[in-house]
Image 1 (cartoon, rainbow, N blue to C red):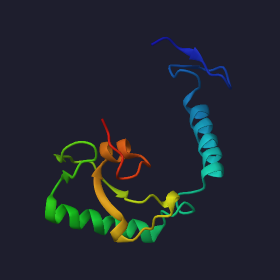
Image 2: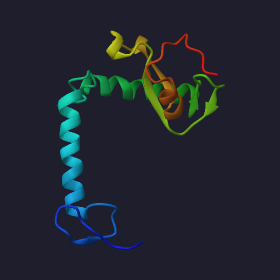
Image 3: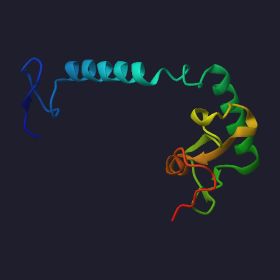
Length: 122
């Protein structure tokens, strides 16, 4: 890959636009801007209590079902990348109670997004 000048300091780099130093500085600035708009994970309801409950839900799921996703919009399938999903999203008034949490693979969780459970994926 040809070297290009950093947009900030002009040093030659193989990165697309900035040297390693200025790229990390740029990414940190972007993260601060996103946090200011979105709020931190804790401010959005994903605090230490939620993380403990999430770990317990995943542990219980793995103990009974192994590395298995129940599927959302697709049949149940094996997956090593399991996540915890809020049945009713926090933004829609859901809670971090166990009854509102279920285990899906990252792909199914992303596919679902904030759609309600009755939504049909074609």
